[in-house]
Image 1 (cartoon, rainbow, N blue to C red):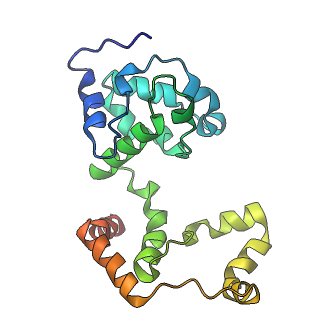
Image 2: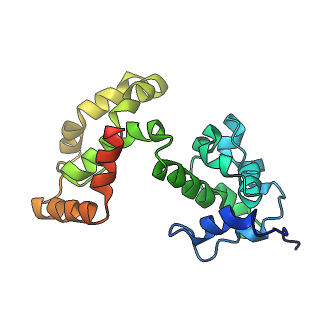
Length: 194
């Protein structure tokens, strides 16, 4: 299998991606042969202008503008790209690292601000929940029955013989300690201020 030849300047971004904590040691970014398998089965590519093959090529070419490209936000993180890649690459992982790079540089915060309520829920009750910003979309997609279920979930769980979805207070305290130590809480506050 042929691998791409890169000069030192163009491989800087690729090396940053490979060196990122989120990158698996098995990520074979430099072995990408640009076959297009990732793009051929990508649901994000099917329904938007996102193209995982092109995104990886831009990373390998050292094109830093890919970090600020709105199209990278159309990846669903389904890992289909990874499952079909003959070189064991993962465009999804590369994408996650690029997005984080944009956020670290104070860009594209609006792309994640709607998820703050998920973080709030995780912090408050120890369990993530669907962000309220998506309720209208879910009602549009699934009808008012979805909202009825959401509103009456505790009653439905009781009817099924299940208790409420809660964690013990000491577990929530432990989760909050982890969120503080890892910087999650500070990150949420930074996003909220942006």
